[in-house]
Length: 254
Image (cartoon, rainbow, N blue to C red; front, top):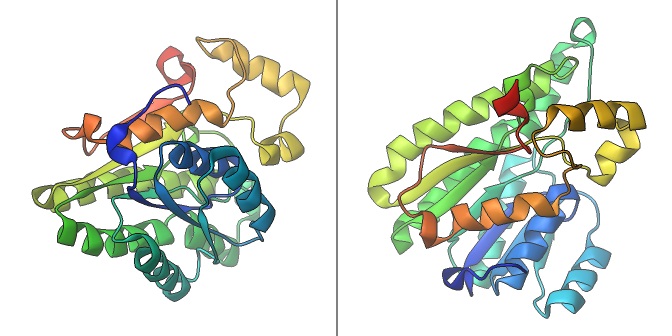
């Protein structure tokens, strides 16, 4: 832990997809701040929970849930609030970046993509805002992606959802600002999660992408944590309706 955000101690934090990739780093980061963290994950995360509890001395609440099942998502959020209190922070992180050539996308593929990458974002925000209005405000952080800004091929369904997340973020920030609910987006660059390394990364593709970055190092999940903690904390209390890009300078250099 490189910095302490004192107001995050004992904060009630809810993270979607909080046991893998960037989400796992976020869960650990909030636990290190002393926050009360609940997260959902479709796959079993018991081993992850034990590991981070041992590392941080702070045990998260894992609730198995398929984020595309909105009633189950809302039930999980209710359960987390019962355990930890109304949410101070919501992090919409769960996503599926499976690649399809545009001509192969069917209606079923389109719907399945948006059922993970966009629809639950809105309904999680809606539920969290109900709680945040009752406690005088809060912070919502919606994960998007620089792939939307770069126009990466074979990601049309995912990119369409990410563009939607950016617009959704701005609209909700305007609608709920009077309740002191801040809504921001965070757009990472190419982060070396296990999924990316297993499915997409090759030495050639990684070297070419790093060359496009201003900082010539591969990005890791831990590199995203500081930005999220900042947006979650009161240090950013007047920042809303914005998108924080953490990509080692790719977007700014193209």
